Image 1 (tube, rainbow, N blue to C red):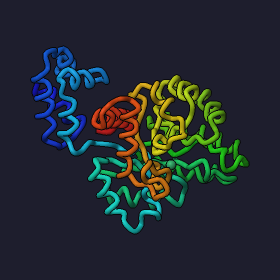
Image 2 (image 1 turned 90 degrees about the vertical axis):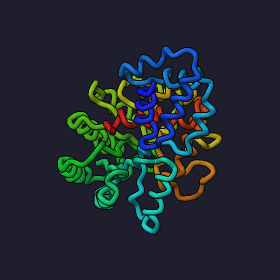
Image 3 (image 1 turned 135 degrees about the horizontal axis):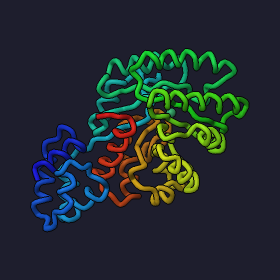
Image 4 (image 1 turned 120 degrees about the vertical axis):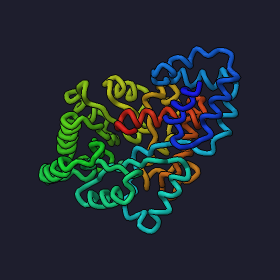
Length: 326
Ligand SMILES: [Zn+2]
C-alpha cells in the first residue's frame, strides 16, 4: 500500500507530502484492492487504475479537497515575448503557485531564439526551449533561415521541434514554402527523436498532405491548440504518434470543442496556454499567462467527468511521455 502511495505521489504531486497519506486512507477504506497489484508490481497506473482507486475507496472527495495544488505542464507558451518584460518573475511565480511546474517554449523566428534561450537559462528547471520556424514567419528566405535554425538545433539543449505547421488563415502566398518548411521540421524530428509541435490554422489539408508522406513509427508530436472536428481528430490520432494540445479555446462556449473531446481518450490530450494569446474564460481579452491554465484544466476535467487532480495527473503523464520528462 505504501508503494502505491509513493508511486502515485511521485507521478502526481512531486514533493507534496499529504498525498501519500490521502491515497493510503483511500485505499484502507476500500474493500476490493485488485487494482493495487498492477501498480505495486511496477506497472504504470493507467486511466482505469487511477479512477478505480478513487471510486472504490469512496474517497474521491477527500482526495479532491486534501490537495490545494496539482502538478501541471504548460506544453506551449511564448512567455519570452516582450508582453512579459515587466513582470516575468512574478508571472512565473504565479504559475508555480498554481502548480504549473514546467513551461515549454516553442520558438517563432530567428529573432525570438535569444529571447527564448535567455529565459530558459534564467529558469532552467521550469522553462524548456524548442527550436523551429513558425509557419506565419515562413517567407521567401525560409531555406536560409532553416539552415540557421538547424545549426542551432545541433547545439543541443532543445526538447522539441517547433513550432511549425501551416497557417492559411492570415496569408496563403507562401503555401508551398510553408508545406516544405513543415516537411523539413518533420524530418528533423525523426532524425533527432524529438516531438514535432504543429500549428494548424485553416490548414488541415496542407498538414495532412505533408504528414501522409512524412509519418513513420518514429514520428511523434502535438497538434497544438487543437480546434478541429471529430473527423480531423481521428485522422490525427490514426497517425499513431500524435496528441492534441488543449488550450483556452476549450472554455469558449461556441468552440464546439467539448463535444469533440468528450469522445477522445484522455491519454491523447495535453494542456497548454499559447500565452500570451487565447486566454481561457474568465480571462478572455487579457494577456494570457501559464497560471491561467488551471481554468482550461478544470474545463477539460468537467468534459471528461474527472476531478481536477485526475485530469492533471493524466495530462502531465502524457506530456512527460511525449517530451521524455521526469
Ligand atoms: Zn504558439
